[in-house]
Amino acid sequence: MSDATPSMVADRYRLDELIGSGPMGEVWRAYDTRADWVVAVKILGAGEAGEAGEAAREALKQHAQAVARVIHPNVAMVLDVGDQEGAPFLVTEFLTGTSVGEDLAAEGPMPIVEVCDLVGQAAAGLDTAHRAGVFHGQIDSGSFRRAASGVLKVVGFGLPDEEPSQAERRYLAPERASGRPATAAADLYALGAVCYELLCGRPPAAAPDLPVTGMRATPPSPPSAPGTEAPGTEAPGASAPGTEAPGGVGQGVVPPSAIRPEIPAELDRLVLAMLAPDPARRPSGGEPVRRALAAIARPGAAPNTAPNTAPSPAGAPAGRPGDTQVYDFNGVPRAGDTAVYESAELDPAPPRTGNKLLIQMGIAVAVIAVVAVAMVMWAGSREETPVAEPSASTPPTPVLTPEAAPPTRPTSEPPRASPTDLTPGDTATSLVQTVGPKATLGSGQTPAGGWDHWLVKFDEAVTAQEDIGDIDPHVAEKVHDKLRKAAKKLQDGRFEPARGQIADVYRDLRNAQVKGEVPLSGPLASFLDDFAVS
Image (cartoon, rainbow, N blue to C red; front, side, top):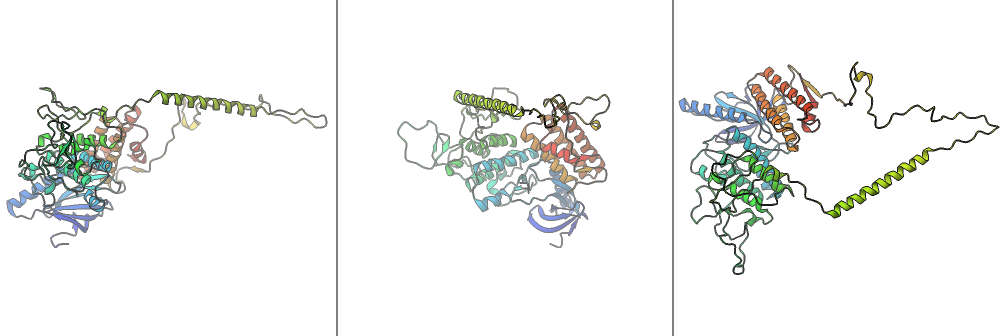
């Protein structure tokens, strides 16, 4: 630990181990003495004196506060921001998993489905940051790290005009190499470069002389028969020699399938579109990228027809989330076009089964019915136990006749509630098993790991329920927004207003369960049942 680095930050965070350093400052594994858990503390360096130093410190402080507003399961949660002897700092959750770069170095190129899953998670996190006006600007393969649960999270947001390191330059968009500040489009370019590297084991590189067959690039092969070449075929996104953008791989990038032939054409097109030198021709955001990757990763979920790449009508309104992303290349679709799918295309109706399968199912049902009837008749015959006639020498033994047997309740009748379940005038409709919460969080009480950690888990439970698809999207969006506001109140030290906001979220979700907008089972329901907020 250097002399300039304190051993304690804000009289709360004990710095235990330096785990990273760079132009922006140092990152430490630290111990939160109040919440009793391990965190990561990033101390931002601003060592200049005078007005320049004060401006730099203010810029760093604003950056830390902006990153703290980004709350998403796929973004490392910022737990605290502050100032330590003139140096701004921010505290984030400590991630114990590996980065995708470390996984790549240890194991080589990853399975295609795993790449789609990981890059999809990264795209979802970046999309939330971009909507909050925060751009990463420093993306490389170390910018995406797994939590202990296996969830991938975006880490290491940089300043908009921060100079990239040498290692980050191979992921740098052409416009960033020209000196322009970080943007959402530049982040998507860098994410495309990371995706390319995870698939192929190497960063994207230009190869304008690589031949292409149809929409898929292949290694050089013998000339085809005369007349079989596709007219106008060219490398996806290929340009004339010498037109590569400075700092980027240019338009003549080798398609991933040329290195790894099993890569599907849809993934080829998506990666090449993300690596387009022109920012306007890249996907419009992280969410379209996530949806396209989800469609590619799920067998049978891809659309049966190619996505629409025709030009939009003049004056057409802007698309909504989930609409097909259209790229206009003078009305001619190219191999670099992005394949982004409608929601109906992501979840197509199951394919029709043939008549043969229906006949087989009918026969199976009939056989089951015959067996069931036979079992019922056999069971009934066994219940008719004969009663022996009493002999003259033996006193008759009383026999319990059916008339003397206590009446039995039909099995179709619902179970009656016990007297403690009902009050006079109530009508029993159903019995619901109730289990007490594991913890009740009231005034002055703090959940294990602290409120910030608990809010992250709450938000992850809502997202997990969204992934299942049985929660009302408007309700989920309102919950995410209120949890973000509660986290901001906690960061400002306003505990009671934050706890009140969390209690409001609980009430809203319970009311939504009554209305059928939120399911009574699943990850969110389990979280609500585990904790009570008073």
